[in-house]
Image (cartoon, rainbow, N blue to C red; front, top):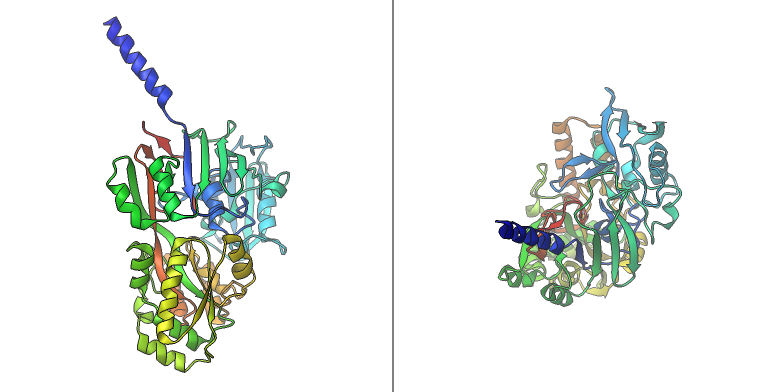
Amino acid sequence: MLIRTTAILALTASAALAQQTDITIGMQLEPPNLDPTGGAAAAIDEVVYANVFEGLTRFGPDGSILPALASDWEVSEDGLTWTFTLREGVTFHDGTAMDAEDVVFTLDRARAEDSTNAQKALFDGIESVEAVDATTVRITLSAPNGNLPFNLAWGDAVIVAPESVGANATAPVGTGPFEFADWVQGDRVELVAYDGYWGEAPALERATFKFISDPNAAFAAMMAGDVDAFPNFPAPETLANFEADPRFAVIVGSTEGETILAMNNAELSPELRRAITHAIDREAIIDGAMFGFGTPIGTHFAPHNPDYVDLTGESAFDPDMAREALAASDYDGRPLRLMLPPPAYARRGGEIVASQLRDIGVETEIQNLEWAQWLEQVFRGKDFDLTIVSHTEPADINIYARPDYYFQYDDAEFQAMMEELSAAADPATRSTILKRAQEKIAADDVNAYLFQLAKTGVANAAIEGLWENSPTQANDLTGVRWTQ
């Protein structure tokens, strides 16, 4: 009996010692910086959201809004005053305390006139932010906005400290369960568990985000075990290989990523945009670029959202209608610059789009850009004709109310809809407005709407806790662990 008990204890101890506590996550794109409050690239949040930085609220894996640095909140009867109660004992990774003054600093910075926040519109309705005491923050709005907890869950609204904010682009300091350790640019970012974390300690002690841009190299890295998981795997054509291998789990879900052929509305006439939208065969792009993974869309809204309207018929593939619209346009035969960022959906999809446009008489000049170039020239500089990009921000149809946004759609009727939406609290009213908004941008052919990006992930079969769906652009490691 003693021998048997000793053997069991030895086996238990051996299993405990063998439990892996580090993980290597593959990513196709390297973030241009690591400050989610000062950059637009989804890759930033994919590294730091919920891992390094936290907001007052956060997105759960099912898209629900959960408490984060705020343990709870309440709103006044008129909907104008929100009071957030902060958790006690929270510290930044440099050891400084996180309190209400940091929240005031963060939100005032994000909504300031000179703010570089990529989603500054999230904070437009905030009239004032004040620290009632160290653990209480009062936010006063200019108009009721029931979406405030949702807005504050975005990566653009994470809480930062005035003492460290200046270095967050390269050496981020947050309040999350992991702290920044190293960034070898062009290769990887390393995080380690933060001993002073206010919440439940993560099962992982170290996480490495490895940047592998080439799909073939990503496949080889997974097969060789150099990468433990690739939550957004860039080579969907190889998923069958992983499905047939018991070492791996294939995780297919949905994202908030509306993948669009974005058009510069300041340069392309409505008739030319209409010609382009009807020249696009969505199914051919989904099959050819995504190997069947993706859901056709006809407007800038996720099909899994209960307020989604299927408007694919409004811009159905119709080459004859496209040629008719082209003949009525001001198109002079010049090649349109099709600027493509690195993701496979853009590069592969761009070749198919160029062919489809050529079939109706529109020539394109493909320019492949690195992510930093795309952000500088297309997103910020608005120097493009066409581009393909997936908008992974949640429920972001309100970007069409921003005339200075990169595709430069300026429509007073749509802007009024978004103002009406912000002021509406009744779910039925909001639903009606959202449906009208979807119909408006589809009818105006603002962009050519291609497909909702699928989340195709691959992981070691012994890993659990990775998100199946992507309600926001994140690789949340707080619940990830090895099972053996």
